[in-house]
Length: 440
Image (cartoon, rainbow, N blue to C red; front, side, top):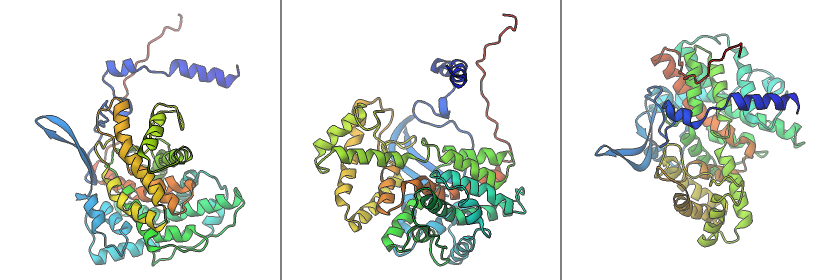
């Protein structure tokens, strides 16, 4: 046995804590109880999630709802004119707590556009210096390097933090797309092209324009991507990366460090990589199901996945279920109608039928085969990977796209933490260590 294996075995022996001890002391693993409810760790005025209602003292599952600054997200997305984009307007709402006037929206959009500029030679000297398939790591390195250019790096004055957050919101699409192009060129030996963003284009339009060799995209493509970004911007504050943002912020650390920490959290496959797993599963289903419209055939293969006999043998149908929502994920319900439009434009109706049949059948199959404490429904990640695939977005950019949206929510929570909390987050851990005698 090598020394690493020996050290591994020592860790396994001395760092394992049994489920019985968690139950004995009433401590919830992952700050979640058996029903998936999170342990309260703070207060927020930025967003809210609803998945249950109370009747006669009982918690009753209900269709999920999500609010941004008091506004129902379903209604908010529908309120965005069909011929325009909503990323910048939604970002303003989350950051500043009010719907912008037309003048404020234009001013804010102009500032975001003005901020889409990296320091001289930054793309060459930083992004292209160490290309990697892991674009999240590439972006995190770039974020920390950008701190070197900020003369007010360690100032936690609210105005300074707002400026820093807005600048990061502006450049995140560039950090992601340029990071991918560097990897695609140096590691995959493909052609290199770096398109500069256009100030008159929205965030979604710039993303597609910078990503594609010919810079071309349809309005519907940009519209669907814009909706995806709006729906991924913020989610109640209780998720892992947002909590990370608040923990690091509470220590008095700088904006770049807080956002880099959030990036490190989001890149974990248990958090930001869910749609990638959905896409891998869908590829496997397509290879084993001949008729996508045959519910019996689809259901039979889904049962094999649940029984651990197919796909990755973990017994999970990815994209189904959520830690908070029960009967439905409101983001999925909003998103689906845009997905249908894009599938029609891309002539992918057959694939859309497969998704629809899985959405129809999987909840009942899961409920029948598992002990369910709440309802099971498709989450937003069930369709987001399909959309990114139809848009020709490489899988390496799926989680970075999540980050491009969620940087807005992180920023809002950082600002709220600085203004309203002013106390370091210092959780308690109960020690179950056994005292030992050196002479024994």
